Image 1 (spheres, each protein chain N blue to C red):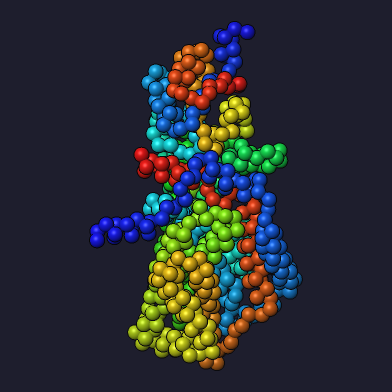
Image 2: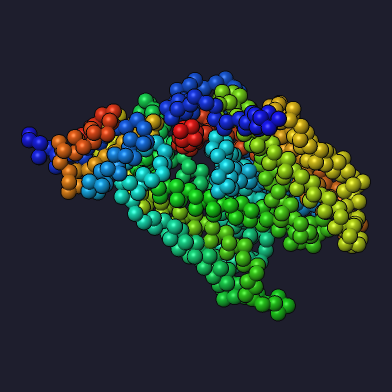
Length: 182
Length: 458
């Protein structure tokens, strides 16, 4: 099998680093060179790394805001509907829409739906749960959840070339460079 | 002169994590409790005792469902007995977990990292124990879904103007958000366990729980955003929960309940009780599992200081209750406070003051702050004191309210005590299962802490 057909079958090439600084350097350089389809894997969140691999605009906060607004409106109008439309109770002529007493429940439903939006929105944007992912085919990748830092350049990238990309990654003193089976 | 004072300050600032730890050593040490280390004898003993108490709860609840709430001591005029006392006590204990995980996160208090995981678990289990009581107190627990608003053939709705309905929403939202917060925090650690276990079945279970987490930089970014936003949402939530709980009392016209100081005083009391419980649990946990490197003396001292501060607020609350009763010149209010001081429940009241106001004062002395045993004993006093506080608020206010002809006495029956002890069993059983199966210290946040320590040295 020649190199070219092998390259299209691979998911990508992955380098293992033992410090976050090396990983950050490699990611920044890769982005500078024009690599776009890549991702870094780390045991804990590292500042500036998402930007280095090309992450742009976070939309999660907006999703949470929308969740909060929907929660607040639903909570209030549920109480309004129950007390004014569905089952109005006239108690000494007091107003049916007694909004101050509807505030606590409105507040709670606001928080509840905003929290749902934050958690489920985050998982959805991350594409989780995901039962299978090619990066796990590298046995050493188990250390990504312990003390090692990985950078994977994917074969879908326009600049991807098995030998050149491998060579590029080897220049950053990685522990090793692996081919990732799809 | 200046030199020595600097040195002293340096000595007082012990690290939050003992030096010499690396990403690997932290991961190994915390995950070994769950994965490789042999389950210690004390775990079996503790779990066994807790499980027996849990079985007692089962019997108590079964008999309650069979016979009705007549088996409890509640009757007119004290219709809110142990059920509400225990509910408020447990809910209050839960508050420290959210405070540690959310409020201290927003305030950038790094020391929360090694205690937030099990404090959050404590919150969840305390809310579970709390939720039992009002649900059982309805008398027909199988109809408890009536508390939720849903279109039904009876054409009825819950009364949204009632604090009791607000409570349903507050507590169920609190339980849900606490669970989400806890689970979100756990996902990267489940991934660590998945990658480290050699057992096929536990690999599968932790794999499912971790949802395929792979630590991608982009994922981490969204993850941190979500975590911070959740903390921001949980912060007003936790304040609202005990405020709404206090509305159950404050919205009524019963002397001793109808007070505007109740919401802040209840919230402070909740945090007070919660930190006492975190200390009660953290001290044995760090001892038996050798986690002294992660849960250091400085953690215990910080928690003791928060306990002292909130204890002083609670003490101020007691003072204001007495002052307002006198200043109001309302005879029922005046009688209520005199009845607390000198009435049939005076021993409970004075013990409450000894436990909640006097006991925490020892924390002022650095000797007490440096002694694990002393902190444990003080925390136990506070646990008891906070239960007595709720007993006093509920019982002394109700048993002699307005008409002397309607006065009465209240005491818990065997089944009241059995249900209470059983709820402690439920709480501890869940906690023992938790420390056996789930890392009780957040591994990935500890790695962040190590990275920060390294950064400081450079």
